[in-house]
Length: 85
Image (cartoon, rainbow, N blue to C red; front, side, top):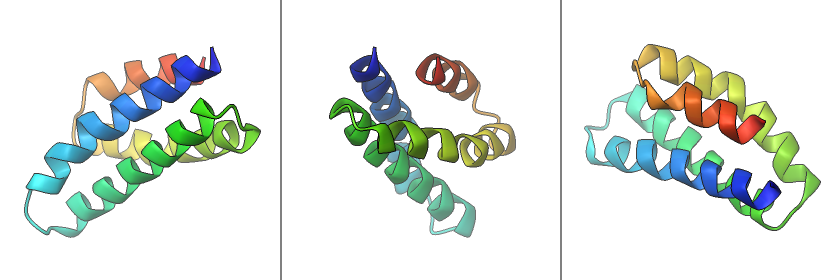
């Protein structure tokens, strides 16, 4: 279950981070890219079954929700909910 959460964290980080990296250097896109990079780190920690990964992923959730709402990303809440459960 924890490894599945890690895979979902990687999916969210890559699916939203790669398009953000291709955009312009706008500060919001850079912030989104950093949030996605943090999500990839959380995924790695979860994959290694470290408790710090779960804590880090939960701490990132409010930041991600802000980006999902701000950029109207429809798949974000579903992936975030699946990863959190």
